[in-house]
Image 1 (cartoon, helix red, strand yellow):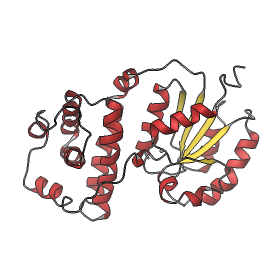
Image 2 (image 1 turned 30 degrees about the vertical axis):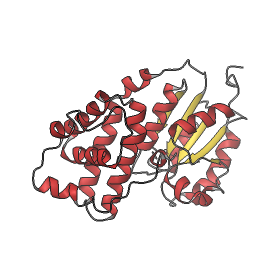
Image 3 (image 1 turned 60 degrees about the horizontal axis):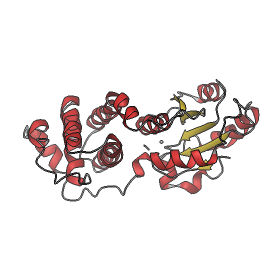
Image 4 (image 1 turned 180 degrees about the horizontal axis):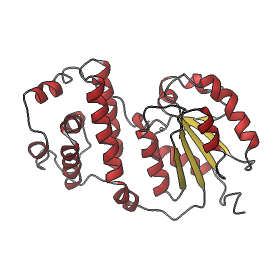
Length: 268
C-alpha cells in the first residue's frame, strides 16, 4: 500500500547498464537458483544491494522455486524476513516495473514475476508473523485497494506488518465502487487505509470517503490513504478527506500506533 508506499522503502534502483542482463540471461538459459544463492557472495549480514535484487528478479522470471531459493540464501546470510521484505522484495517489484516500462519485459513476463513475488509473501507469512510478534493491541484495521485495482502485493505486505504488531486486519480488493462501500461498512474498524495507484477513482473517492466516515458507527474512525500516488503525486490525494501517508510499512504501523487510543472505542 507496497506500495502505502511499500515500494518506497528506498530509492528506486537504477537499471542503466543492467536491464539487458535479465532477458539475455534467460535467452541463454543461464541457471539462477543454486548457482547464485550458494552463500558466498555476502560478507556477513550486509544490506541487499542492486545486484542481489537483480538476482531475485531473475529468479522470479525463472520460477517460484528459484525465487524461494534466493530468499533461503538471504536467510542463511542472516537477513531477517523484515530485511528481505523491505530491502529485497519491495525494490524487486519496482525493478520489474522499471524493466517493463523500459520495454525489457512484456506484460505476461512482468505479471508472472510479480505473482511469484506475491506468493513469496504468502509462503513466508507464518514465519514472518512469528519473527518478532507483539501483544495484541485490540485495534481493528481495514485495508482496501481502490476499486478495480490490478495489484495488491503492497497492501498484503502492509497487512502483514500490522498483524505482527498486534492489529486485527481485514484486507479487501473491491472490484467496483459498490463492493468498496460494502467492505467499508461490513464491520467496526478503528482505522481504514486505502491504497491508491491511479487517478481513475479520485473524484469518486473524494465524494465517497466523507459519506462513509459520517455513516460509520465509530465517530473516531481514522482514514488514511497511501500507495504509489502518495509517493508520486501526494497533492492529488489531499482532497480525499483522509490523512495522506507516504511511509514504508514499518513507519506506517508506527505512525498509526501513535495516533490510536490505548483502547479501541469499541472495547471501551
